[in-house]
Image (cartoon, rainbow over all chains, first blue to last red; front, side):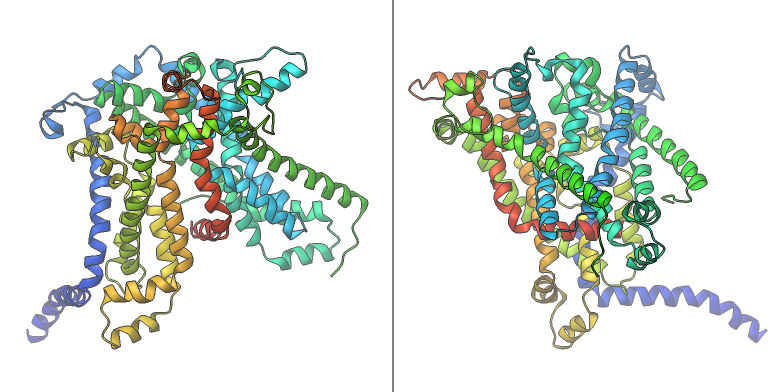
Amino acid sequence: MNTQTTTAAVPKAAPQAGFVRTLKFVVRHRALYFMLAPGMLYFLVFKYVPLLGSVIAFQDYNIFKGFLESEWVGFKWFEEFFTYPNLKRLIVNTLLISFYQILFAFPAPILLAVLLNEVRNMAFKRFVQTVVYLPHFLSWTIVFGFVYMLLSVQTGLVNQAIQAMGGEPVSFLQKAEYFRTIIIASGIWKEMGWSAIIFLAAIAGISPSLYEAARIDGANRWKQFVHVTLPGLLPAIMILLLLKIGHIMDLGFEQIYLFLNPLTLSTGDVLDTYAYRAGILGGKYSLTTAIGLFKSVIGFLLLVVANRASKATTGEGIY
Amino acid sequence: MKIKTSFGEKCFDIANTAFLLLACLLVILPLMHVVAGSLSETNALIHSQVKLWPVGFNLDNYILVFKNTTFWRSFGVTLFVVVVGTMINMVLTVLTAYPLSKPYLKGRRPFMLYIIFTMIFQAPMIPTYLLVKALDMLNTIWALIIPGALSAFNLILCITFFRSLPEELFEAARVDGMSEYRIVWRITMPLSLPIVVTLLLFYAVAHWNNYYSALLYITDAKLRPLQMYLYMLLAQYDTSDARSFMSTITTWDVSPQGLQMATIIVATVPILLIYPFVQKHFIKGAMLGSLKE
């Protein structure tokens, strides 16, 4: 009887003691928790509240009623979106630009990192790095400005070259057929150098003893690349590729919005730019949030599928 | 150890060098073209004679940009956002990172998960917009600052760095009766100069380059930041703003294109000026981030 009560009392008292200990810890280190409070509040208000606010996709959201009072309408907005006449165009544009990004823009920094790694002259290597990292720090507005001036019919360098070779000047930015090329090329121009840093870091992390062993086995630089560098890079490549696939519907709104104009809508209008026009400019809050949710769900599903495929084939995955 | 290079390797080295030089050239040429255009005589510019070097020498484009009060107002907005915004960013980042860098802090893991979750699941555009609207920040300068007051990515960079500092140092300071706030200010910050500089510049550049927030939250022309002003000048695909501005002055050697080019350069120069000084910090910071991920 006696032992029974004590054994029963122990597990009951233990969590309380733990709680008291935690409380004592918090009180003693209250300065640390005070410091933490503003940052945590920031994430709560500006990250979690809008995330919860996504419920307006299922409401007939009325700005005066707020999302507590607005009427619930189920999948009405998803239905409206799926019957939108230009939907096919939006989805095709989004997927095509994303596909081209994966095909061309994704390998570019890997190639750059590998080539930079083969440079023996450190001064030259540093010079190249300094130059190619720079565009990352320019805003999309400025990059757009450079592209605009470069392709300008009247003054642009590219059209001058075309004319010098006897061709007719082309107003590239007003032609739908060039839109995707310009987006991909300017994206590579801006971010190739910066994205290469991750791959350079991955190469730097490969043990030098692997290279030594390969050299002793008689591997030349190409063989060293194939058998040491590439396998060493593979995990980084796979993880970044998977992340890109998870964000296949996010193409970089800022860039596309800048380059887009009424003449290039047919090849350049994507889910995000439509959402901006319909939502912020048109006030269709619920519809646009439904598009956002649709994007996230597709992205999430793709990520799950791609991760599974990657694990099955290369053994790499992000979870 | 000197290794004899084969003929094939020499060919590769030459091709590699050529390729990398080409990449550099592709970065530099657009910049040179716009600089050249902005400094050229208007006649040469509009008759497509400007390539990579100015034809003649003409500062009127720049003088007019600097005489434009709309430009200065936008510049002022951006300057305010860069200075005040970066200060808020830094205070929040350092204060949040310091406790989270303590391995003994109770609740550290849930706090970290709470932060990382926001990096994976991003809030959509409209609910964020409605929040800013509900907070009555639309068309105020705070809409350009507060919604981006803290970056989860930069925060994690900062935590990682703080963790590398020896705890004995803080212990000693505590024994001497220093408060945690003083420790952050007098010990952690001075020891963390590389990361502090990196974050300072990441945040400042982000503010300088930001036009997205203005696109969403600002309709009042008085509050347009510099990038938005530049966008308006360029993306309307006509140059009515520049033209109407120019019509008031006829004795200057300027053209809409020249003014646009000069504005692009003016918006670029601050980045170009700080870039060489901070490059190595940036890269250290980015490396740290990439290895952590």
